[in-house]
Image (cartoon, rainbow, N blue to C red; front, side, top):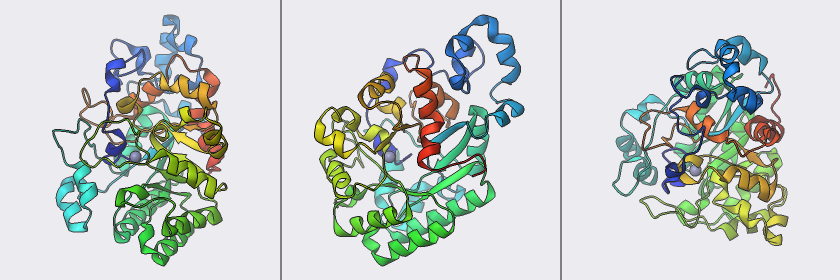
Length: 374
Ligand SMILES: [Zn+2]
């Protein structure tokens, strides 16, 4: 998640390993090719050839995607599978809001702290839509947060329902619940299903000293299977730095969850804390063969070589592009959320075009059963 994902993120400085196409700030001035974001679906040699600058500039108004060109991408465009939004009332004073809502863990994550280099950014759905347009992203999947209280989960779900109702062509949403609420959590899932939600997450059962294998969490996950919902779990890399609010998410417990509920479609956020590279082990490979990984907060967490390395470890069909927007995942240079910059980072030269296209849209479209008219 964002501020939250701060949680994912808090960690390490991948920024020192910048490669071509990385932290450009999205400027069209200077290194213009690096600021191109949609071309992931175009051939890279074409995009980077200076002779093609003029035709590409013609479809690429500075900082924005030409609308006819964007329209031609409908149904094949880029999907951001990991976005968090908060209404303006939260962004105005997050710490006070968290105290009022009884959410101290989230409050600790979004409050600046000297031991945490990641910074939270804020955006409502109108800001998100502008940034999606600028980056050439067709659809965003809004993820909830792992709130401590079911009341906060329900509040967040209603906010997302209103966002999706306003822009069903651009936004989809996952619901969030607090499993400790028991039947209320299940009832909330039913309500969200009726409102058009398409999954569950981002969840983190470990945050409140529970395991995803505890009976109340298993009941939630079993209901997700009944609804046909994928479940996005926040996962922390066990080697990441300590920081205030960090949640340990033992990787073996995720394998046990996958073994216990083999029909539960899992999306393991932040590259599953490194789980793709455990899939060389036969037990993990067998248990996680249907699991997806999202790329949320990659610029903050990992060397950009992770895209090609994950392709080598698990293939190209189980990775979903996720920005963790509006988290500031380039904290050394970023003061405002910037989707184009994150998307550029995902377009690493070492990744083949088919895998990149799958990661940026096709895999999510298949998993979430999204159609052009969805
Ligand atoms: Zn997260």
